[in-house]
Every structure is written in C-alpha cells, then in structure tokens.
Length: 86
Figure (cartoon, rainbow, N blue to C red):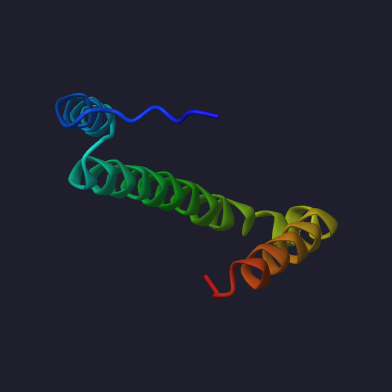
C-alpha cells in the first residue's frame, strides 16, 4: 500500500485554492446582519398592520360583538405566543 505525498509547492497551491473558495468571515457576518435586519423590518411592518387592524376592530365592539370577541381572543393568543404583550 502506497500513500501519495503532495510536494510542498503543490500543497501550498492546493491550500491557496481551497482558501480562495471559502467566503471570508466578514462577508458571512455581513450577510447574517442583513438577513436579521430584513427580518426585523418585516416583523415591524407586520406588527404595525396588526395594530392598525386592532384600531379598526373597535367599531365591531358594538356592531358585531361576537366578531370583536373572537378577534380579541385571537389577539391574546398572538400576544402570549410572542412572549410580550403588544
């Protein structure tokens, strides 16, 4: 059984080629930061829509109490699921 040994120059060349194929750490961190920022922006926009819907639902407290109670119950689930009261 023989093992092949890569001479020094070939080893350095192979190592360099391998390293060039890897993204640098800063690029990975930047991509992660951008993904988190996008998530936060989308989440904030969704929560703004929910709060606007809450305001609009107040009319149904007298017009359609069952609908209002159902929405209020669903909203309570959303609040408790998020871990924070809105």
